[in-house]
Length: 318
Ligand code: GTP
Ligand code: MG
Image 1 (tube, helix red, strand yellow):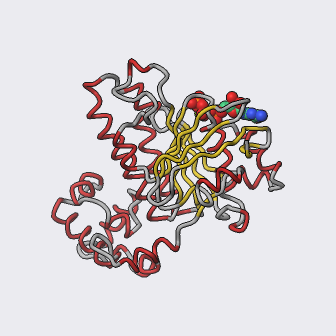
Image 2 (cartoon, protein in one colour):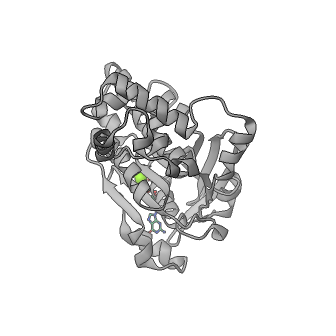
Image 3 (tube, rainbow, N blue to C red):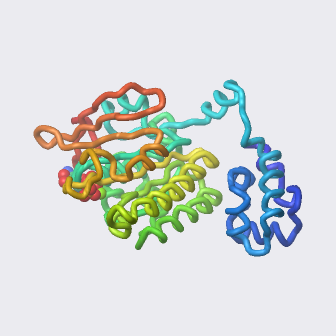
């Protein structure tokens, strides 16, 4: 977005040097991001910016960034032209997704334990670094690991297998372990900064729900959990749109149906996750050590299935 670079924070109505400094201190240097915020959110976040000042900043950012209103289908088509795809290593899987996981939206991988969610996440963090003609974006990845299952040696193995520079591949994956759901949300906020400072094509949250599920237990906590989760997803979606990154979240389905408030094979996040995720893929174990990916929801792709396997070299056709 070229107009973003041409406008300084100081050009916004109501922003002097000091306010600009405060905004930058909070990591809010991006016009598009300010334009997407609510005034209350902004004033709550930055000391010294009151509600009415925040209103004027957001309004001015909207004008400069040209967001918030209707756009023509032509504009929409232009934005989608920037959309990129990251291939998995399985041709069948790629066909199902018409090329791969796309940028500017959130893709949810959900399924039972051992279905391959973490393995796919590892492989995507490698593949995003490949050049475009090989199904990558030539960019790095951010990996938010909530279950301590990120294994650098596994990345090494996949990169080596693909003939890539292993050290470089590892250097381009920014990994953080999230210790609880608040920390996880904070890391998503920090990911914005990493995307500003580095060329990032993919953000992974593996797993999205583990902390939320263990911290917010029972029906009484559900509303609060969903509210937090909604905020978390909004942060991720904002980064996806601002920086043209893909966002992949994983989600384990519960094996204890008693704890479910509905269909046990439904994504655990319930409606909120489904609503925010543009693409939903259900993974399950198939026959003879294979795995099956089922595309359940996409804005424009038909439903369908692909068979894949997890081998030493990573994700391959089943
Ligand atoms: P949970 O996080 O428990 O919900 O599962 P998940 O869906 O993330 O499963 P994950 O991606 O961790 O898949 C685990 C499976 O991948 C194992 O059961 C193995 O079959 C396979 N796998 C993992 N690492 C390797 C490896 O280095 N070589 C091979 N051949 N298979 C592996
Ligand atoms: Mg996993």
